[in-house]
Length: 171
Image (cartoon, rainbow, N blue to C red):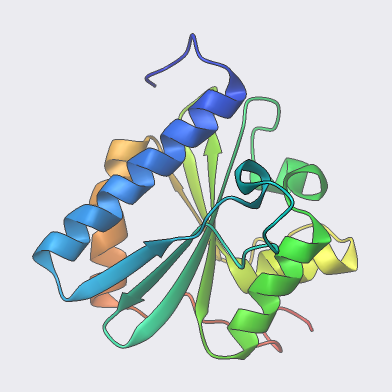
């Protein structure tokens, strides 16, 4: 994984930049568009909290992506309460209930593995203070390069794969 001599925060920003490059590539080749929401922390106290890190419109489906990374936690399942606040969880749940696909991507900064979680399941677990239920809603990739190849394939072949009803995730 590149950037091992960087701080965890710098590697998190690098992960976001890499993901944005994937979206930019898709935008140039496919009929889709994306938007990067401003980071509330870096914008100061003058902005309300944002619904996610990225929004993607693809094949008539709205997708919201929240990106997380950690050097300390090996998986999102291990560090959910410290990696996602309840406000972020509420945003994802509300967009999912409105019909959007919501996703949480987690980068293990030590191994380089990327996890792709159903955001409704993650946000519902966070709101309830419970562990994430791995009901086939998480995909592991050995590194970001592999993730990049499979990301577009998954969205292209089955854009609604990540839609979960509230009943499926127990809310």
